[in-house]
Every structure is written in structure tokens, then in C-alpha cells.
Image 1 (tube, rainbow, N blue to C red):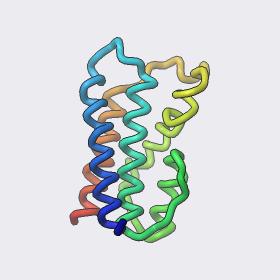
Image 2: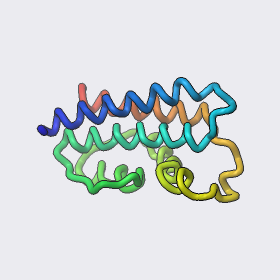
Image 3: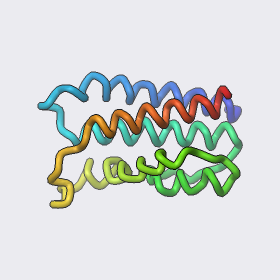
Image 4: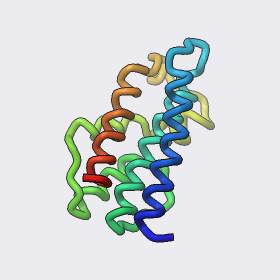
Length: 130
């Protein structure tokens, strides 16, 4: 698969996670871990789409910190506020499969999570189509 095809596939897959988030975000019975997981997954796929489009090889990982660090290492700039998505990394594995630690007893700030998702979508689309 060519890099631009793989990138487009990742963006389409990210959209599926976004649909899930949009359907669940206002449902107070939907667990924060599930919403956080889908926000993290969408962001992860969008970061990978940008990396893929630029021909950057990345290992199979859910670590948003690692993916973000690859961007400037390969000359890809991003707005500083996107750095906040690093906080979503535990939703990929730790909060999904393990007991949620006490520091996560605060509910997920759903408005913040949705805003992060939208900012990463806008940035990634500007990189891919700009």
C-alpha cells in the first residue's frame, strides 16, 4: 500500500472512532474509559496518518508520546496545544485492561477530550491536504 493510501485509510478509521465518541460523549452512563479509549484511538490514527504520508516509519505502538516525538524528529511541526494529547496515552491500554488507578478517579473531562480530538483532526487534515 502506498503511503498516501495508508494515510487515507488511517484517517477513515479515525473517523469511525470519532463517530463513536460523538454518540457516547453526552451519555453519562457511557464509561469514561470507553470514551477516552476511542478519543485516544482516533488521535493515534491521525498522528500515524501524518507520519505515514510523510514516509516516516513508526513501530506498532499506542504510545502517543512516542508518536508525537517522531513528528519534530522528522521535520513535521505541530501546534503546541496538541501536546496535551499525551494525557490520553493511558486510555489505550492501561485504563482499558487494568484497574483504573486512584489518580484517575476524577472523571474524564469530556469537553477537553472532544476538543483535543477536533484540534488533532484539523491539524492533521491541514498537513495532509494543505
